[in-house]
Amino acid sequence: MKPPTPPARSLLRGTLAVVAAGLAALLPAAGTASATPLTGKAQRTVTTADGDTFRLRLKATPVVLPATGGTVHVRGAGYNRTQGILLAFCVIPDGVEVGDPSTYTTLPGPCLGGREAQDGSSRRITDTGVGTPGVTLPYEDGGGFRTTLNLRPEIADGKVCGRTVRCAVVTRADFAATNVRLYDQYIPVHFAPSGAEAGAAGTTAGTTPRP
Image (cartoon, rainbow, N blue to C red):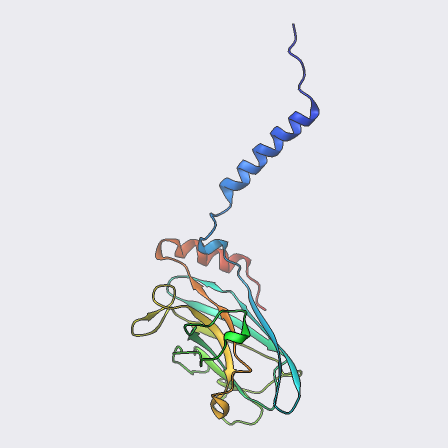
């Protein structure tokens, strides 16, 4: 006697369960470096004392780097061209909640040193300042800019990203207006654990387009 044929709905549920199990085996566990988004974004709308409003937008790719560091491509738009900014890799101050500008009350820092044109970790964006070509850059149309930063996890002695401090690609008003917090933005950056470095680097190189 032939066994009864299972209903089509039961077969479908079984197939879906097998597919789900297969995907779970292939996908990285939550919380691992390779599960972190490769592109970070930040934005805020600010109004100056003169009543001018600016919608600041910042993007960095990738935001997951090998344990030893790497290059991040950064783009910005909507910034106030009459105010220069510093683009750098800095410690996120205690009390700052990324994404909540009301908590941006403290100067970001310390920041990773290095202002070399080719391999530095900071840039000054300004239309009025004079500086080293490749380090001091003019704004593009619409208050935009695009450049690269070379980052490593050790910001300073005792300040290691992901171990002792939180770190981010940041913008802030430049040295002419250090106390102005209107232009503070943060995009957190993470470094893969040493054991996952090869996998994280391969993922970054294989799937992350240049902004």
